[in-house]
Length: 376
Image (cartoon, rainbow, N blue to C red):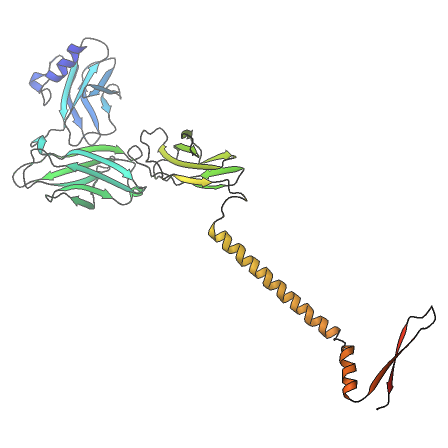
């Protein structure tokens, strides 16, 4: 098998020319059809099965009676080696390179990387090629895989040399879920090869850490959260919990909530990732829940203020009620003049008051008689 793959790399870089092809070969004229995105050939005779490879890695089997291999996407910039082999019969191997590259590959943008972040944004960055000319400039495009239409990125950032090395799209919901990113270079005195990368937006998304909200009392703590994404609708979560000063532990979840019984005091933080994805979000900021507030626990300032205000209103209402009742009683039962005051008034008027007591029968109550004598 090693001899077979060695033969692949010893094949001419531009593929087999017609003069080099075996006239008795069953397969001739190996070529790429970029619009149809397939590797095809002319078949003269019957073969059992043909396998297709890219850079020596098996990709797919031939279809349509072994007439061609269909690919989901073809490289636009990076040169790759396409080859075919028979599964049965005598050893056979044929390959070509695609695409043909013009210019110095070391002048092309390098390190092209893209990621979706903060729900709505797609950002890509790259570096200036190691052997790029001084006047090189780069521009970034995204390409529809089906129609091959290209659209330039609208928001660039420069490095300190004035070279465009970063760009982002503001609304990823308007982009296809699969697309090809290209960075093309220009120069006055040289041809600059492009750089490309095919991406699936759901796979390169970095989720924001979900915010935890919760309600609790002395009996239970209920925490809830929500992850946001335009491309992933199923998530995995890791919830890290710490009770008081105890060591922290982690719960793996798929639900959007978690409940604890008899919680007392807890600290929690959370991270998320799309289901079947590899990259986790950052951890959320720690959230602390004080669920053991009792009679002996210090009350918040706002609670004390509310209690003072309520007590003041109750006292004021009681005073108003008592005053109102006192006023009504005064009207219904006016006060009786004091007897001492009446006697004093009579003495001042020159009259002598004599008191005589007499006892009535046992059935009667004692009666006080008052006789006013003449003036002396």
